[in-house]
Length: 227
Image (spheres, rainbow, N blue to C red):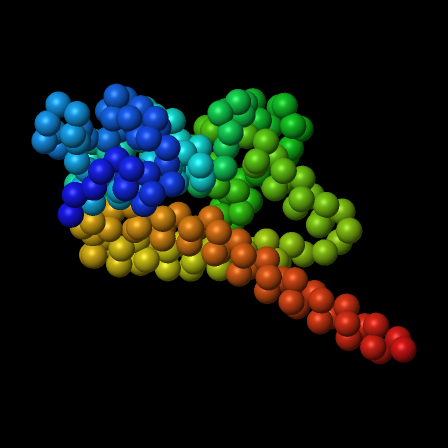
């Protein structure tokens, strides 16, 4: 099916000027030219505009990141690192200005014990992106473990987080595989939105709401008991 640019705007809620800008930047293919002033667009344009819009608004991806990703859009979701790069950057939860340390620098800067660091690495509680790549994210986890130790409580909940996180990551990988199995040019942006919304919206919502539900019940039970 072919569309006028006004119909493209209506389908995507993206202004005409922005669509033309995406074309100039190489993010979108050129329109089919019927006459000098008559252009037509197709379903692929709609899918790509939705993808670009989502990646910019929800993931903060730059034009260059998106352009590189779209150069590999005909590969599967799992086989192209370029397609996954913006996602992996977000999953790492490390901002661009974060300071990175080697293990030796990290221990010296924060004053942590090497024995505790090695223990948390072995238990999978600490997961630096590289063997010599430590940040304040790791420092925050070590401080939390130290607080557990200070009050004399075993940080078993953190270890359970690790166990369930591993299981959840395998499930998320299965979801990725299922999305790859139905991949087509027509559903390109929809599959990516499913994947990203699952990882960043649904997961947070479900986990937070269940925690709220359990703690609220405990509080309610306590108030009822005291009455």
